[in-house]
Length: 94
Image (cartoon, rainbow, N blue to C red):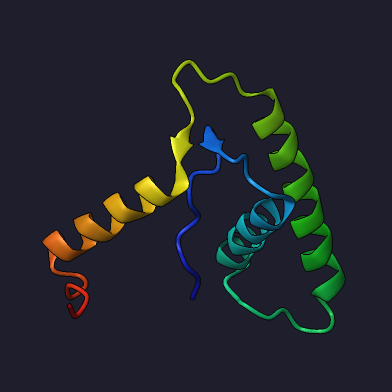
């Protein structure tokens, strides 16, 4: 139904508002059990996404990191390598 929600804390550059919104949308989709709400539920769905994105941004702003920020490209490469090793994905063609 939806992709995994990724860690947004302690990255350089910091998570954008679009990334925070995407995570909130994925969360609400998962909880609601639908990717597209009915017309009757659209307002509640949109309100939930807005509120969750808002509080998520506050959380990210308030969290204190004790380790240096992670590099997005390096972490993505590590995730791809783990996926290839696990057999979930094939290695890219050379």
